[in-house]
Image (cartoon, rainbow, N blue to C red):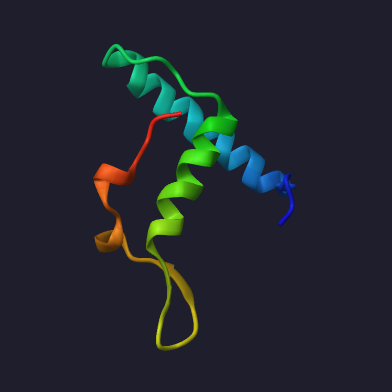
Length: 74
């Protein structure tokens, strides 16, 4: 398994924009902001709990499979 992952430009942009919005919300509730890389690790951890294959062969995220107790803050 590779130790690094190269993101496409549009993925980098989307991550930066989402991180900015989430960090604004975190700061508003008195929490520390997250680095983009920590947010990405967090998203991967959550997604891996819930990734599945539909009967049509599409990869999807089943949010009902996410266990909130397994979610850690980086």
